Length: 103
Image (tube, one colour):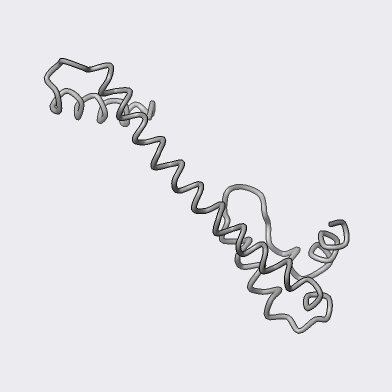
C-alpha cells in the first residue's frame, strides 16, 4: 500500500486536493492517471479499477443514507404530532424546522 500511495503522490495526481467531501476530484485523478501511458500506472491498473468500484459503492451508500435519514426524520415528527391536525400540522412543522436549520 505504501508503494501505491507513494506512486500516486509522486505522480501528476498530486495536483488534486483530496480533502473535503468533493468526490469529483478523486474521479478526475483516476481518469487522468488512467490516460497516462506511464508503466507505473499500467502496473496499478487493477488498483484504479478497484477504486472506481469502491467509489460507486460509497456514493450509492451515501445517497441511500441521506434518503433514509430524511424518511426517519419525517417519521419522528409525525410520531410527535400524532393526533394533531394530521398533514397540515406536519407540513408546518417540517417547514419550520427546515427554516431554523434543525433538519
